[in-house]
Length: 230
Length: 293
Image (cartoon, rainbow over all chains, first blue to last red; front, side, top):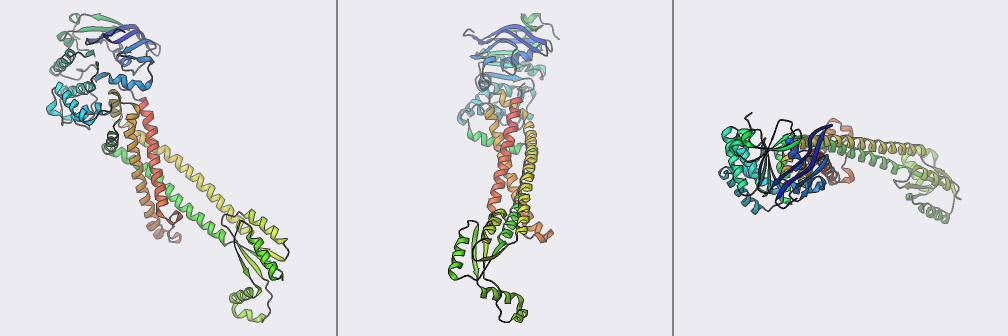
């Protein structure tokens, strides 16, 4: 893997009950690159992401993420891999019994940081996503867009090199979706690589970036402007 | 790894999921309460049996022997490890005892002193019936010994009952322990299942499995401690107030070894142990199986 590559999949095959989901697939993501991952439902997009954060092992092939050889690494190193990734899901996965500050601080507490550092870093991350003023609000008091911003702040907390976003705008209205895309674009402009799974082709066209499509278990690059709204 | 975080989260987890915490506490409390009651009843039964065994006396009746032979017999008796005390009762003392027991009717015998001198031997409480029988058999052959009397059948019956009590008590303890452990493990598993989102989020941000597990262990210890305290309070209430009122024949059964803190300490340790092991087992299994997606 070259120095500027942060994710590399080589000849990866994933099968479930004999059905091939990913078929001898190759993929690379460079440092600081923004890439959309699209495909029909059941095409294997979520499986693809799971390979990266090691919630799934390939039947064949190699997966490298930052300096980790994912399929061959021992289980105890999996948390280190995940700390090098910022992961954002469609369903937010915020802890409803903690306020915004604690939801972000939590990512730093579990990785054993000191309190003084945690406080400073949480405020920085909340400021990056424009939610400093809502640090004491509970998640239920926030709009969907704001909740997703908190999730992004939490994903940024450990300063990962890569952000994986699995349909981050899936639960949001068009305005909130645009605002989240602008935020992700800003984060990418600071040098973080982003791999985002989406079904929203309007957003892909509005914020054009490299776009990879999963078809029949293979990855092909497509032009954003060629995508038709579904 | 922040120790204060683990403690804080352990206590907070307890507060956040009150209902499931209460379920775990009740499950552990019932188990500890049953075992605590069993321990207190068994201990009292055991003490009663030991006291009855101490009442068993071996009477060694002597022929008319001189003082030096009497002394020699006494020394030989005292050499047995199972012998606790040896008391000499002279012919005169035996007669006096007879007169005390029979009152004016004993006057009919006038001054005839027909009772032999004897040794009253008390054995140690842990002496087995077979050991006493063996001792009695050999004493019978000693020169100067006329007859040896003791309640062999009574002692054997008592010993048989005591052995039964120990086996039944042990089996019951084991049964309650196993049932309680299954109940406690499953309750704690449900408690942890209720926090699957927390576990998912922790895994998502790169927490190690050990780190995720620790607050659950603190919570388990806390639940076990509270359950142990409640069970101890109930044991006190039941034995000091309920049983004397509703089962007066039993009276107030004493605390094991005469001190309340032995049983209470054991119950607290048992509660903490069950909470800790239950949480450890359930958390380990659940954390491993939880996917973050």
